[in-house]
Every structure is written in structure tokens, then in C-alpha cells.
Image (cartoon, one colour):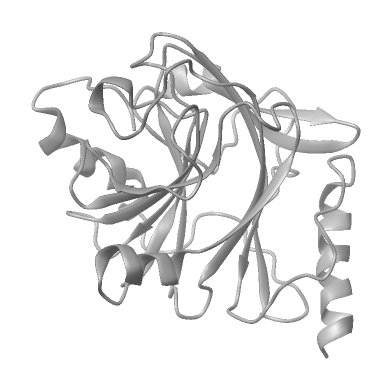
Length: 263
């Protein structure tokens, strides 16, 4: 999570984090439903022009600075979100209200090109992640948060309380330089993770957030994000994500292939 901009940091930060997600009651992001409600594409970045900031995403912090960190890029006909943080840490978020019991899993792709050296999310002093995906729950005043990270140093599978906010937990999904420069797809069951990490039934999901950060380590972090899908408990596409050049049509084609095998 980002470096403190004001004091006291631990008190004010959670409120800032959720301000952009809780201010809107209805969904402000485009919603493209597949033929079945088993799979819901959330964001593919195909709707935005290259070299622009994705307009439907809200910024926690300085809007102009966020626009220099996060830009939609294109490779081989596929658009994705590129993040380049130079001693920076700014979160962006997409309002997406839904019941986690209905869609308990999130799938996405990411690619890390540069890790923040010495980043260790377990300590305040080194709390930088090359890539982070947030799921934000419950209420806008004191939300509960799960952050899934690609860490520089913390082992995969580590689950630890965020040292900057007592109602946030972190799960390390990828770690270290293995696979740098390669797209990797992830599926997380944030509903089950919430029950395990917080020992309770989750309330409504308020939205998802992203952050590539390097402010604490005074370094550079570079990552890409793409193809966010919500999945029901039993839905699992039988084919992997299409290659990065495939674009939205192939993403929905993969969804259709799954439906053909399950209906």
C-alpha cells in the first residue's frame, strides 16, 4: 500500500482507500455478461485508447500522477493496463458491487517486468509490491481488504496482516524473479480467503483495486494487468487464457468454450 502522504497515516489511509469505491452505489464500470451468468468479464481494457488512463477507474491520490503511472498499452492487437512506478505508490480502483456468495472467485492475468528491490510487504519500511490486486469488502468506513501480491521477496503462499492497516490481509500469489516478463494467469477464491483470514462471512464486495508501488524502496516497479473475470463457485474455463494478442473476442470465445462443455 502506498507511502504516507499525511499524518497520521494509519488512521487516514483506509478512509482514503475506499473513498473512490464507496462514493458510487451503482456499478460505474461497463458490465459485459456472457450467455451464462457463471462467468462475468469485469475489465479487459479493450474499451480504452492506447496511451490513455482507463477513465472508468478511480484514483486514490493525485490524478495527474496516476495518469503517468497507469496507461493502457497494446501488443499484437491486445490492450492491457501498463504500470510504471518510479518511487511512487498510487492505488486505482473499479467500483464493482456484488455478493461474493454469487461470484466468489476472481481471475486475471498479470506480467511483472521489474521488481522493487528489497520489497517486503510484511514490514512498513519496505512495503512495496511489483503488482497488487485488491478485493474490498463490507463497508466504506472501516472496510476489510484482501490484497493479492506479486512480491519481490516474500514466499508464495504467505498470508499476513497488512502492517499499515489492521483490517487488511495480504496473500502472496507470486514471488521473486521467476517468470519475469511472462504473462501469468491467476484464480483466487476471495470468498474462502475472507472466511479463513477474517473468521467471518463476508459482506458485499465494493470493488477491486490495483497498485504497482516502489515508494518505500525508492526504486522502480513495472507490471501489466489484463482480463479480469468474476467466476461462480463451479465455473472454471477448460481452456487457458487466450494469448495476449487475442483481445476481448477470444476472451469471450474462451468463455463460450467453457459453456459448451458445461451445458
